[in-house]
Amino acid sequence: MDKENGKGHDKTELIALITLLWSKRKRIIINCVIGGTLSIIVAFSIPKEYTSNAVIAPEISAMSGISSGLGALASIAGINMNPEEEAIYPQLYPQIVSSTPFLCDLMVLPVEVKTKKDTLTTSLYNYLNDYQKGTWWGKIFSAPFKLIKHDEKEPLADGATLDSRRLSRQQQILLKSLDDRISVELDKLTSAIFVNVTMQDAQIASAVVDAVTENLQMYVTDYRTAKARKDMENTQRMYDEARENYYAAQSLYAEYCDQHMGVTKQQYLMEQDRLEDEKDLAYSLYNQLAQQLDMCRTKLLEVTPVVVLLQPSTIPYKATTPKKMMIGILFVFLAFFGTSAWYLIKERIIDN
Image (cartoon, rainbow, N blue to C red; front, side):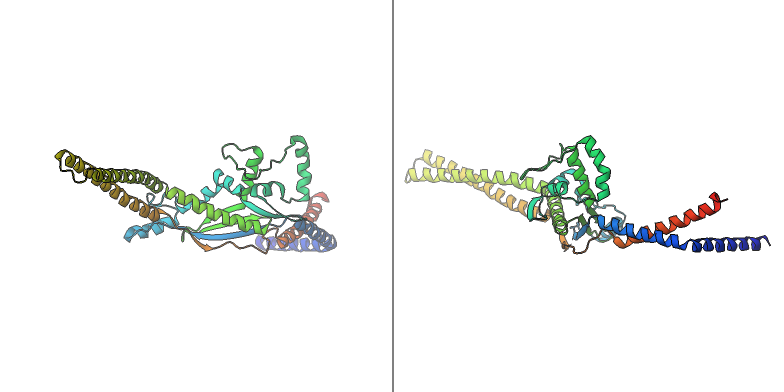
């Protein structure tokens, strides 16, 4: 009996709620129209932004048998089963791109900026510093702070670079802005790397994606081949010295033979044998270092990673933000919900 009375009471409350909202439908509709109008103003006041993306597949050291199967399962969980062979594995790529030195290198990237008058070429740093559009309410809210702090923009001169260890406050803010616009995601199952860049200019977004993929490949290649390149440089230096020594010993031996041709004294023959032995020894060392240098070059080619560009960047034609439809729905919903809530509160609390 009590349950039936409770259900009847809930039904009565629902009917009363619907009746109240229906009686106020004109005001609710007017407020929804106002909310829709405001959403249009807001949506068209937000600058358009475009997202360009690329997909790369880094080279991963191959494993065989059970280790290969365990490595595949571990990669899904983000675990590297063979760290010695792959010192920088794909899980670290997002941290590399977000690092300060990497972002400083990107800041000097030359980009083409379209202005109202013409098109000019400047650095990515100056583009983020001088050519970013903002909302009108953002300018209003930030105006008092600008009057208090008097922050001045710091342009980057042509050919200049950023010192990652000595950054001003303005430079740190721009680096943080660039970091927020770059997204690097790893597919743990396939180890594919997804690089996304969002900019207010579609062409610049595509250019930055290309720069990120190229710089990332160079960074990983330099790290992976550092020891091999050092070994090859040392071997090359010893090879050059051995070649010079061999050529010098060969010339000295030939000159001595020419000067003492036909001489049969034992003393001269012993000196000739000694020079010949020195020449043969220098040649032996020269030959060994030549073989070792070839091995170093082969080793350098083996350890050089290969990054396959599965999907190159394209210039997007459709803006990713702002999402005007979602903004319109949100404003209309808030207008409807807010107006309805006000009448319910007024009916239940204020009037009673």
